[in-house]
Image (cartoon, rainbow, N blue to C red; front, side):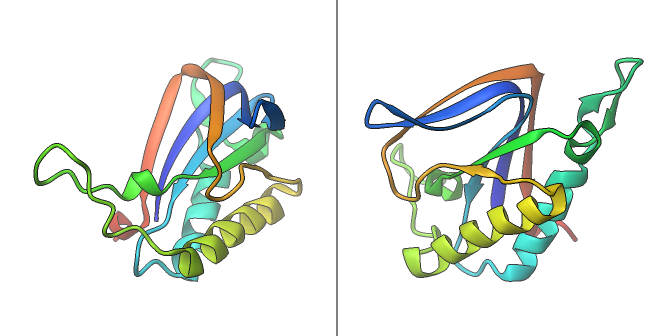
Length: 150
């Protein structure tokens, strides 16, 4: 699994011109599920997301986590994070997980993160055409790939 995590002052998902979900200070998380990903990947990534120290402390040093600041999270499934760009100019999504694997792992990631934060994780809609808006605070953007953890 691959995540793109952005520290935001606000973020939202709009579908069909209607606001679907929004957060204030916290993390906007794009979630890409690839073939071969497992629940162990989900557990590791959710724990890493909740505890990652990328929010400033009283001295402006990035020492606080999402848990520490009681921040919010918005997770959006994004299969394009699995793109291979080795050949040509058209990305290949051959490694993206199918719905039968991707949906349960995305949902489990959201549920696990929600449990760690003790609050609901806002979500997009799997497979929908979404418009995602955010204000990246910093900017701070982190990419995490569960296959690179060892």
